[in-house]
Image: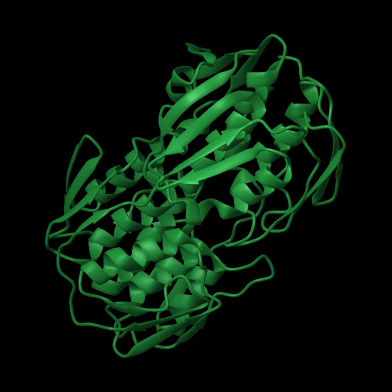
Length: 419
């Protein structure tokens, strides 16, 4: 098992190219199950989660070819049951339910695994399938769904923690081949939902309203093959912007969509950093003075929960008292204890972190608990005095393509070693 050693105190500068979005690529790859014809997906990031998804698709009978960020998939003959040994490693594997149900009218998938960031049920997914006429049974750790006749219906994706991105995508993928019209109310508005909808439309689906709270889907009899380029990963881009804020002279993230990142760039500007947008690039420079922040995580277009841990790392070394309230996954604060090991002054009060900035952190052995927490610990190590040893880095490889290499190209001193 690898670990990452971050030797702190080195300033970052330069430009980094952002990879394709993991959270877009996973459901888009799953959506290729909806047609027998070949599909070509480009700008697919090289991540362990992507590897698991391609393995699942292969196990289901798909022909899969991958080279230089381009994946070609042909799902001519497919099975309807996904193996536990692969599914257990990745929560996003649940997104194969929708396309299997839409095309084959049945699916059996093990309850998913993934990060340990609190309860992340798939109840909304299943409720959506039931609204379309499916019979759902959970038994022996498996979800079994049968739907001889999928029919369009009104489906609600609302919950007390906001809409579900995967759930919206899952129901959308099932509905594109259902008879009649489906209306998803309280749909997730994230760019990743729009990206999936655009791919489905390229395949022949009839979808309106993606990116709003109400999505309308008129079912069609069949879909055809298509080509698609995955959107840039806004969370990776945000992570590198925070890296520039923590320890940068001038850092530019390129191949991004700035409109997708306003919920990150606006707080950074409020905190005193100089943010400049130019085409598909965003540059961050130090400002005259840093300021504390008050942030609340909410679904898109608000401040994303996937950037909460990284901002904790930045605010830990920002003067004053900052407050971050986690409204999406209230238990997503396992990185706090590790940041405190590095000298951060953070008081966790329920789902709110009260952060009193300190001048500098100290390198220490820390343990990554989930994907974004691991990124936050690496970022904290950039500014820390001494060496930070981040263990369980398989988490970071789930969602960041060569993060250590990209940071080193900006001037960081990071080693990946065997634990």
